[in-house]
Length: 68
Image 1 (cartoon, helix red, strand yellow):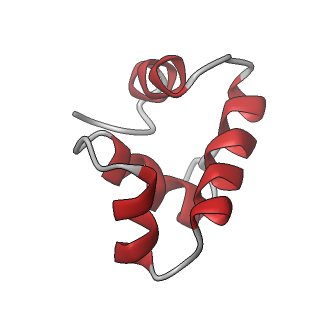
Image 2: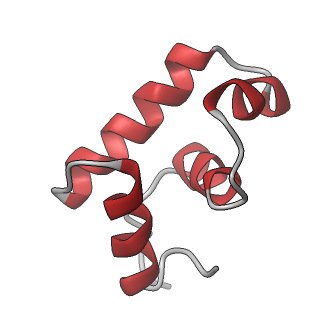
């Protein structure tokens, strides 16, 4: 099995992001703070070397980490 770039939680966050959920909605659904959601997104963007959420989603799809 190939190791995922994302942690399990980062993957959960991005799966909700591609469903057009807001940070607030994601935080409520996962029962964690909005700041924690932003940290997960930021960490994933750093790993991917991208500058925004949209670029991160595009790169994750390109790498086969997420499917739309």
